[in-house]
Length: 445
Image 1 (tube, rainbow, N blue to C red):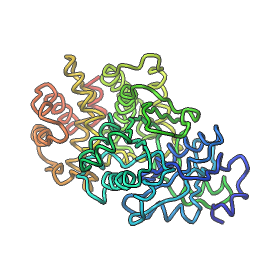
Image 2 (cartoon, one colour):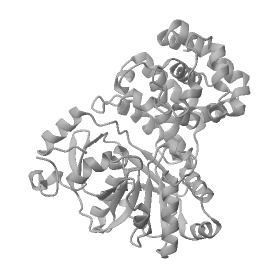
Image 3 (cartoon, helix red, strand yellow):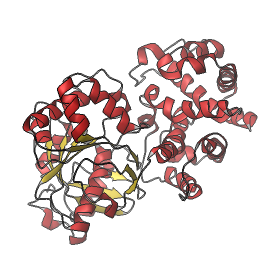
Image 4 (tube, rainbow, N blue to C red):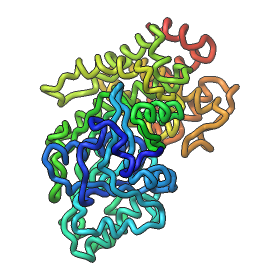
């Protein structure tokens, strides 16, 4: 028997939704697993904490009907397994698919917040009517025409300054009258989001069904840890996310860099160096775990500041345990995808900072060399720049480094011309190719 409102009584009372929204106040673009494990949970908890049931979520899929096909038959209910805890989340009220009238939802007066999780590469595409940014602008145009009031648009993607980036892309697609309205009525706060959410497997679905007592095809699996830091800059009303554990701050950037560099940077190193299938397997190797500590301590942590009062040491200490969680089954291939869009903010920007300070970021250089080996040898490269990144797997390390450093969208002109960086990466790639990872780690250490 499948999960739905009609079968919810079969679920244990303590595992049922914390709140039942009566209205829709949030529209979310890109309603994948991460949103359902993160922002949707915070929103439900906020409604439960305040009794304010206006903040139901209308999710919108950007490219397919897959999520709608899973959730619509379940009345948009789904199970969330976080560690050993499993419960049903009820904050999503509706899921739109391409072709549905998203603009009408964005123009509805009771819609006060739009959130987005559309991945890094979506921000690099040219804005068109069918893209996430294009559909957002169409909705803003409809909202302005309807005089429906202010709106806050919250990017929850792994980009530094994601709010400012989104505001700039929106502005580029707005005609002058619409731009003037947006500048007066729309806020784009930046955020930092942190929760590991691997792809759900059939075994996960079986486990959630056994725990809930009903079949759930939309279940999401995540870790107990969760964090959401939001710039306190809203155009109007919003859910009381701070009562659900979110942190509202004046400046998100220090938290963005902390997460992008320490967690995501380490994830990328695992993806391109470990050779493991799952993250938990990679950190089970003591030598590789020691490398990750050196990467974080020597190359990444010195690039962070502005975190006064925050327990940075505690956050760093939590990461190995989070990575080692065998219950997540976080596939390395999922992290390795779209590396050209992730590498700059995760590893290359901190490399620039270390070089500018007169230090050699050799642990970062090793991860970059791993990425270069990955894109040069992978048979099925999942990356929007795959055609330009693939190369001759038999080429020398120097030739491979020269070829890939020339991809300016990734490395810029500065790293391409930086002698120290080039030599570090070339040396690491030579060692990886000739001796393998264990010997390379011993040589660097």
